[in-house]
Length: 345
Image (cartoon, rainbow, N blue to C red; front, side, top):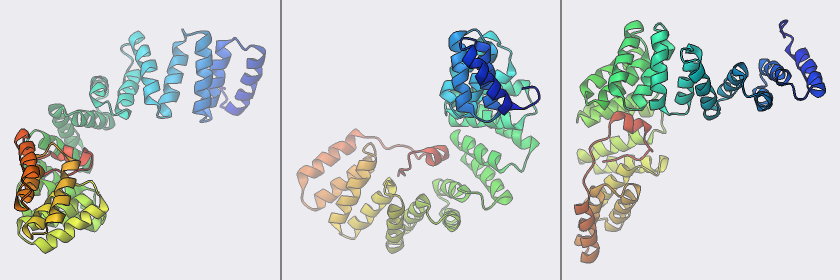
């Protein structure tokens, strides 16, 4: 083992395990030799056998936790590592591993206290600061996220990822103009960054700066011809400008690329209604309702369509549903890029 001949060591450990099957140290040694060869699953099995014989082996618990962590089995790693941390509350290595395991599980709020402790112990580690910042962001602890991303940018002002994520945090606290500034900075540094132009276009759209929004959505489509949301918002802007032909073409493209976009169907319903294509309007508004029954606008538009066709009972049902609902606010940028994919009005 000390000479780094782990395959030879494995052979010897296996021979010893056959003659001494109840010796936990031999099974642990076999686990280490396997782990050193990258056989993490097999190593974990040996560590567990060793711990079944003697649970009071902190080093073996740590080795098992590391094996599970390195395999991406974060749910298995967390209880092992937390048990060790109770015994060694000041152990920075274990603290980092617990925080990173929670991060890997997308349990960002749980990761924050461990990562905060680790960044204080390792203030120069940009990687730790970045993971902490992202944990704060995705758990919507925006003050923490803002502080961390600003610190990262002080050290590395050309960090595109930090500009992008700082924009999400700023928009999350309703500082949309500042968020736009961060995205524009990212654009100057890396104009080909995936999704950047959609994010910038969406914030321009939200602030009703449609000319700039159109430019950004078109750039996003140039980089990613399959971006259904960019087509949707281009179609919505065309509809606002009464260019129904362009809007219909763009919105149909969006629904072909991604059939679950609510706004695309809602806008198509508006076009079909205004052009007296009522069966198409009903189908489009019904689809918009299915994608998000809590939004009142599709119910209201469907009610108007039924009234126009003289179908009063159906219209009254939709008007009643409209009255019972309250329209949502515009989605934040973080909700837009991390949501289920449906696009709200």
